[in-house]
Image 1 (cartoon, helix red, strand yellow):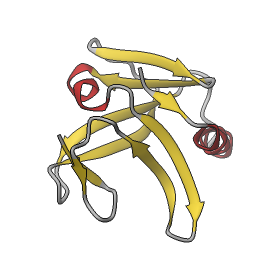
Image 2 (cartoon, rainbow, N blue to C red):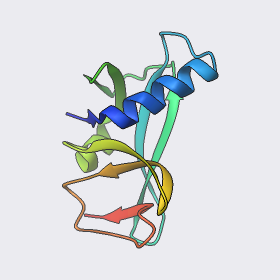
Image 3 (tube, one colour):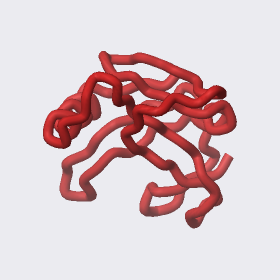
Length: 108
């Protein structure tokens, strides 16, 4: 399962409205090689499902990931921060053994 916090849901809904994304759009989360710790997150809106997609709905948000990425982000929560230490989406990933200082990448 992938989870979406209330704050992340608010910002996802705001972006979808501002960019005029229709109801067929969903949040795609992927894990890609890179960053200081080895893996980075890729977060974007998409409306093209793929054959190996894992589909979840939490807090009224449809979240999709490919099977390879899901292995690394199972039970992860997508959240949003608008504090002084940084603004944007971030992930609480219980599978991450460590993260880099900026929080952009992780290792398992």
